[in-house]
Length: 516
Image (tube, rainbow, N blue to C red; front, top):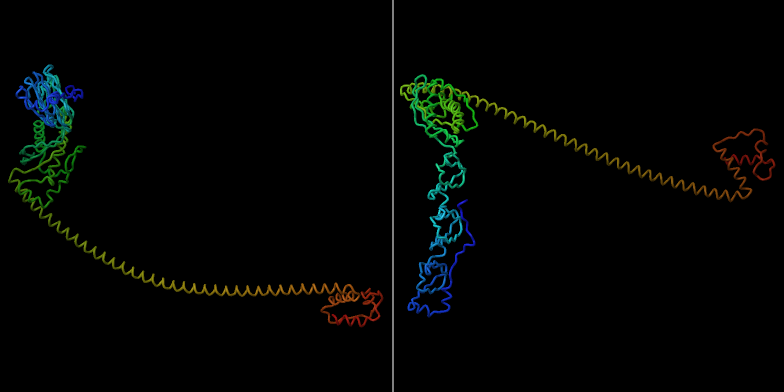
């Protein structure tokens, strides 16, 4: 940022226009007779500018017709959009986006980096060099270097002899600092050469492998290791040779349980005991090659390699070993390979026969299971049909019973309604008869009361009242025994009006008896 210069609005391009003023005074005749007066006339089109020297002073003329004197010479006419215009001490640079303009201030010797935009510099000590493309990894600026470090890398720089790492970005390295390149921190693959090694039981094995690694601590790796790839290749080959020489072929083939577990990716893990049980073993053993997906040796090499190298290389070198992949493994002795091929062929045939027998048993079991399933399905279907028939019959009987019950209920309800209506009619009739009787009795009572009131006002009425009382008392009596005491019945004060004993009692008694 110290060397970057941004566009300055105060530094505008000064364009002279007195040629046009002179043309307005002189008119068109001046242009016609200009050669006779030692003058030069020229036209600057729109979008162009004229670079001239007026008595040794650089000037820039804009569009129009210009007439200049003999001391004023035309250098050239250029488009105003030209990226770089140099005219004496005047420099006009148009820097595009994604670029930088590079120049040098000869007075101080310092570089000047022009940011995107238009720059007008009127200094004789400034010399423009070139435009810089920022996509390059290293851009040389004389003794300076513009370094671009991308993501996944770190820049290597030595400042006063001390190692420093540059993070991703754009950096300017100036002497006495020295830039030594970039180092990748991404996963990388190191191919190991094919090596022939003997196992502990003297079986020669040819092995080719690849090691996957990533630089975890670049500062530690550059400080402790001169050549990372060469050192990693040597230690990987030595470790693989140590693993092979410390194991017999039988031990390697019998081992299949992984014993190394890391959070770092360790590649595919497979059950490797199945190699000699596979029908493909005969074809593989015919060439002496053990396929990676079946041979237990691959997992054994992977586990022991990661156990013995991972922590050591990471702590001392700053390099993380991620995985080792065995590309090929061959028994390098044709005689041993042929023996293993024969044994594998016999074993594969035996296993194939056993597999066929097992398959036949599985087929028979499947057939029996299918027949049993068919019988069960048929039984279930029959039971289902019977259940449906019983449910249909039960539904029919229930429907009939429900219909009969509903009919009886309707008939009983109708009969009860009829009885209710009939009882209501009888009760209404009885009520009407009672009302009529009560009305009759009321009218009769009223008549009697009126009659009694009318009769009670006469002597005959009093006697009739007494007779009525006597008649009510003797109601229901058919015979009256009258003792021979005439005065008993008539000795009482009667209501006939005179208070005397009745002498004519017999007719009255007869009359009373008749009345009763």
